[in-house]
Length: 614
Ligand code: ADP
Ligand code: MG
Image (cartoon, rainbow, N blue to C red; front, side):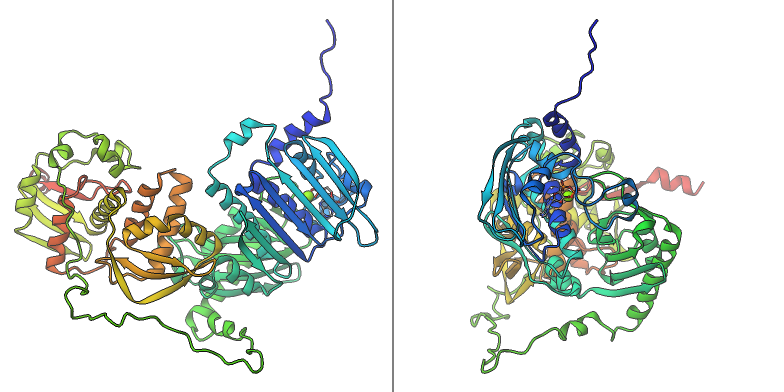
């Protein structure tokens, strides 16, 4: 038999390697951004089309390449950043594997224009699926411009594997955010489908954080700083009272590289201990500087984990630093971040008159007019009541499916025993009270019914919102003073995506500038709502559901809204509110389970009670 082992052609080897390095458009964005930073660029422009699926273009003013280097840069294991294995232990650049451009060129159509300051002419290289199509001298600006077209054009399986445009854009924004955060002195912009998503001049770290995560966000931060001989730690942590329910803004950077580090994450968690509710996550943006010799980044091209030689020391330093800041800044509120920020305002240009802000009001608004008055009853009873379908079988009907979405059959097993709904509804109205500002207790013929007020309200709101979204029926209550809210670019993306649906539910939102919106109306009955908190919560929940549950837009929105707006435990309810809530709950299609799959109420049967006294 003949020998059968042969070396793979470079183009095939590159395509295989590309599978590891470039998993989605965001991975290519990350590699290009890092190359530009390594090239010493002070200005970087990123242009994306169709979430990077058709175009990713990066223009930098870095050192550029000679014609030979330009051609070499697409070879596998071709790098200017390390020479020998020993260099691996003192890496100062972001790249060093020499794999990115070779991988990208194997699976896309790439056009590279590059010129060094000292050269008269630049170079143009066009390369497609690892094949050089064109190579010639060209007139171009100093620096490098690289356009990646039709990513995965020759690997349809990969292309089909990509997620929705929204998800892919989100990944790109995440990568951009990580690079922009740690390079605040670099001018950076990102355009998507011809619209500016980010535009930053060189700025301070604080300004950069505001630009990336929203001005509001940076106001919630307190500084952290700790300098030792071998380790420097600095950055910001979120004030405990603003901790989020979902793992939101958590950033570690080690020697200017974004990293993930569960062990260090734990040290921050530990520092926050007791200051946060159980289900809340601290926000942090922490920069760590150590001797490059003491850090191992040589793990995997797309992974962000690194190893520190002094893991334990770092853990202790970080925890102490965070603890110290928490003590200093949370007990002394006068040392507030907001105050520092006000120092950033610049004087108006000479001779320029400052106009006072114009506040739009509705001159016809009369709070005593019954037409415009806010309704007193907090819970509106949905019209449709379908008791049969509720109790006839455990599995919901097709129609109910959308109302129980996300709930497993396992979770659906909680049924109110033999009690008929009419019976429950009848008895319920007789004796009913709130217990510990958390439960509603009432007597039903089979025993004692205990309703969780928050879960009940979540169910009521969820059905109400999904009905509105299904039937396109909106009801909104005009804001007396429209509120202007600014969000981070990624949150603004989500708002733009669901603005119409939010409108149906009652949040009348208009775009002002890229990330700023004016809210002119809110859902009727929700006059006590803090608009910013509610919208932020909804966005976070919506985003999480999008990634984890793949819910359809309407169900996702209804779920996110309900979870955020529902009254929480600890709120005292008036008698008429308790009654209205119970009425509304039992008018729901699925009163037994909350949209998140928890039992809304529990019945302690007479038998169970009797047993307790035996
Ligand atoms: P790595 O970054 O790991 O070295 P890449 O494949 O990303 O590998 O790039 C290969 C080489 O091409 C780099 O080492 C660098 O010399 C050069 N290069 C890539 N992008 C740029 C750029 N934007 N400006 C200047 N040189 C670049
Ligand atoms: Mg690189």
